[in-house]
Image (cartoon, one colour):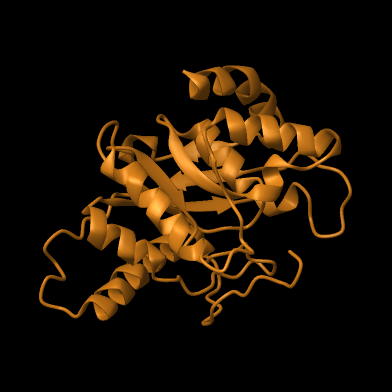
Length: 222
């Protein structure tokens, strides 16, 4: 109910600003657990995916999105609260495991959770190596994965820009990836890596991004 209210109130405004082109929404299962795994280019990624998805997707969001000040702070707080985003303290030494536990709870309830395998947004437009948390979620839940490729969200507020500006945004929801039973004979660590790499390969095939070949580290203070 809250999710639908947020979509009705904020969706038209956001769609007018973003001019999104959306394909593949039919690939998102309407019921049952599913993991939405996307590339990550901007703060706005966690806005455009929920407003274009046919079902509620529980994204993790850094706690600062709920405590900001000014117009942008009020907007982010209203939006992320409205769509049921889960606040996470990224400075908590156990933040990574807590995040996975929260997402697994969503999946166990038959919900949809969103994750950025790169960990943090790409500041140079390249696609970074995926971290294996998504592989852990797959093995723990048995949920299929819908890969997502975003483009254009990075142009809404480039680094150093003070104001948000309209941009051409594209969201592609890919064909679901199923992993059940495929890695039963593989050591858990290797299975997580193999699953994660397959997901990132699917994302790159849709996004066309250059591969960075390394992990993306969060800048100090970001």
